[in-house]
Length: 114
Length: 113
Image 1 (tube, helix red, strand yellow):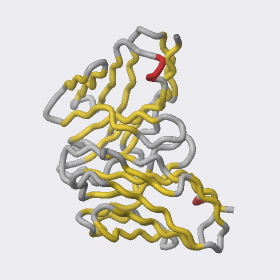
Image 2 (cartoon, rainbow over the protein chains, first blue to last red; image 1 turned 60 degrees about the vertical axis):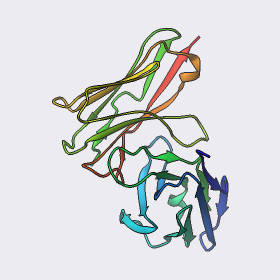
Image 3 (cartoon, chains in turn green, brown; image 1 turned 135 degrees about the horizontal axis):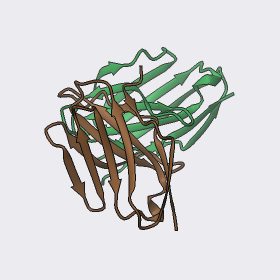
């Protein structure tokens, strides 16, 4: 299994809603990532988990809350989002956070905040 | 601060010809460079990579060249095929740690039959 899966594919939410994005991989990777990608822009790193511990938080607002329940699963909890948070949210994983490890990406969740 | 730059937003080539995509970086501490391909409504797919100890890496029709002194890398696709039409992202990370990977803005490649 060389796949990173993400659910849901699409999500529309209001500014007062609470929702969660889910990411799963079964490649035995020990590093998992959340990226945000706006249209015609490169992916921007949000969070990194290494061995289930948060190792990088790129000054992301607290309305985004990551969670890594186990080595295969990564969640992103969303609360009180703003319309400018509408974007494609990508999950990725890699063997470890060490050198020379490519990251494998999921298909993304297209989020629209109304 | 954009540490990885792809200055050509788009490139169009004829099928069978060579496609050359370029990427420049500013952080001399980067030690690992990658190319990803992205189709619409899909996540980026890893294509090829090169570490800073090499200046060339080849995989089938894809070759990546690294010029450390110029802080420049390029991806060559020979021969180009219509299925190669996609957005190509250059990415860089390091030193010694792949966690913090920075992406360029991408180049949209169109291969015409």
